[in-house]
Amino acid sequence: MKRIAVFPGSFDPITRGHESIVRRAVPLFEKIIVAIGVNAEKAGFFPVEKRREWLEKVFENESTVHVDIYSGLTVEYCRKNEINFILRGLRTSADFEFERSIGQINKKMFPPIETVFLLTIPEYTALNSSIVRDIIRYGGDPTPFVPEGVKF
Image (cartoon, rainbow, N blue to C red):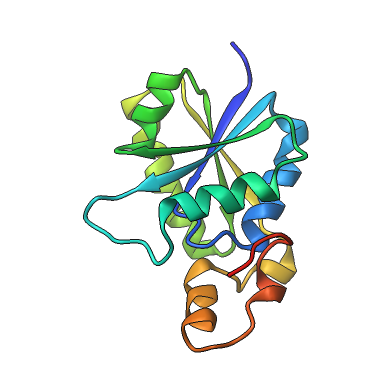
C-alpha cells in the first residue's frame, strides 16, 4: 500500500504553520492531500474555493501535494480514497490531548489508519487561523503569518 497522507483542516485561511507541516512531511509520504473539510453547519470566513486557490498556489511546486475538498468524517474520506495516514500538527499539549482522542477513535473506526503527528516549529506555536482572521477582520497586516502568494 502506498504511503498517502491526508492533512485535513479548514485552512480558513492557511497559515505559515500549516505550510510548514506539509513541507516537512513531503519527504515522509509518496503523496499528501491537503483536504479542506467543509461543515454545512458552519460558514467559513473565506469561501472554500478561495481557500483551495490559496492552497494550490502555495504548493504549486510540490508535485506530491494535492488539494481536495470534502465533507463528513475524515476517517471516511480516508477509507473511501484508500488513504492510510492522517497528518496532524501539534502546537501545544492541549492539541495533543485533543488530537490523541480523535486519532484513537479513528483507529477504532478504521483500523488501517495511522495518525502521524509533527510538532510545530517554535516560531509558529502561537499561530492559528482564528488569530489571522481577527487580524484581517480588524484591519491588521496578516502578511507575516500567511504563506507567500496568499493575498486578501
